[in-house]
Image (cartoon, rainbow, N blue to C red; front, side, top):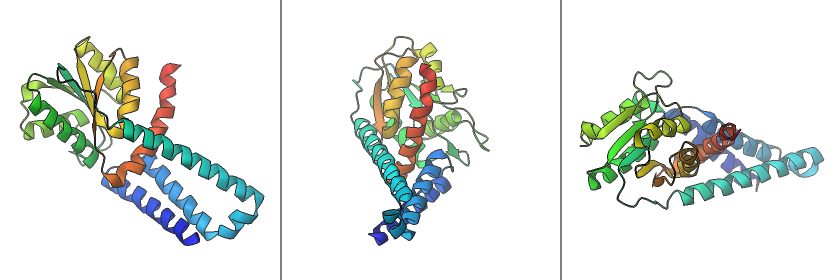
Length: 239
């Protein structure tokens, strides 16, 4: 059992560090590394975690929290796989994600590749790409997304660029002034669909449809951890 705990801890720690290297070391990546460290400590002090009451309590609390996080992550990822687009949409909103050296990360590329396939099959749909500039990048997320779509054959005239949106809530708030009551679908990562639906409804884009883009398997833990933290932070919009 100690070896299993050690291997889980090592895998989680390395996965969090890898995701941070491939994108940016954010809260989600930090949480996964932290979970990995806890598993490593559990393996290193296995007997103490079984014998000492306080450590047994901490172990139980950790397992409970981790189990709830895993169940929530499974729910949002499975839900995000069931696309709801009808094929008669007028607008598609493509949600942004942080860049790496002015280029889309694998997560953002997946959203954009999904958008390219959708736009090629629906030539009358107008795309809205959204995302401000962050970190040391010279380009905004939206501008990098626009460049990627154009380089993959999408006519620049079909793309509207919103470089002011800092987060999901602002993306839908800004998009509401464009789409009004038109039929609209948004594209984001599967793990991000549930919160995006909540934000779209809150910003007045009622009955928004969605298409989930797949996430690289090795990045799912960090992305889901980040999403749980973001969901908690989103409570402020309801207050």
